[in-house]
Image (tube, rainbow, N blue to C red):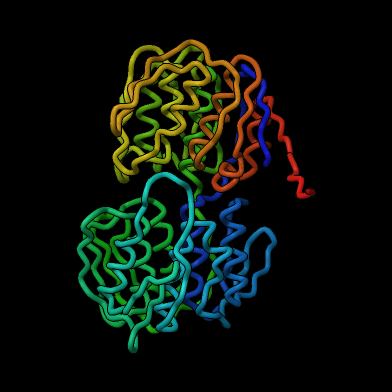
Length: 423
């Protein structure tokens, strides 16, 4: 398995260009299955999950051409999704609703993904059933069908769910009549996906609020769409500068998507300046202050920034705490950081952070996407050599991460350990 050797400590400073948002790109790629026409998508990040999504679309019958953009022709599509690919990413759940909406039938394997809690799909299936689908789950497969077409309905979500909101919104685009999603997720990636569908001719109103209204249409056209910048990648690089007492400017990003993150970075002592499509953070050589974090659905503090801020708090001045309200089992990185000299105490869904002045290089193991980047950044500021194992996770969510980190001063080396299959 591949691993990183990271030599520290280093100050992470410089300029970085932010890639397109993974959490928009995946549902948008799968939503192209709604149309029979060619779609061009710009600003697609180069990620492992994106590669899997494109392979899935290809296996389903879509013709795909890659250049600076990705061109997708989904005219001739199969309704059965291959297990060996879809089991690798959780986002494969978004294949079901466009197949159901367009063809009235779809089969997908139960989705895979990171080990950060149960992340049930019950709300996805609840929404599709409300729209009229008959669904069975058997032998690790989900089978869905509808007599005729899906029909618009009022759906009150019992819990805010980004994934389920997307599933229902995508399916309702071709349903008969009007669908209302109440208690909908408000994330920017919901808005981005809605705007993509609107570009193709969908009638969607209220994306980004707690009530989304979808008036079903008979068909969607082709079109050209540009994915918004990745707010989590942006926040990660800002934290990288903050923990190393550096100075960084992130370009091709939207500051308005990061209000809560920027507020907490200011509380940590960062000097932040913003423009229309850039953010600058300067610590002026100072150690950050610990901050109190409580994750919550957008526009609250994002759970996908929790691991990075855990690291910040563990090297900051004072005692601080982070409470995780979205996923259980998302503090595994804390155990690894303790190996590096961090001082922390986990109490239920809260971690108390006792800031230390130094971390020390050692062997650590990533268990999910965001834990992997927190351990990599920890290695950048630690004394000595840090070896990060299971780095395949980081390629699921960070485009050209090794190259970008080197550009801002990281001393990082990829080690490729090929498996020996001989007996």
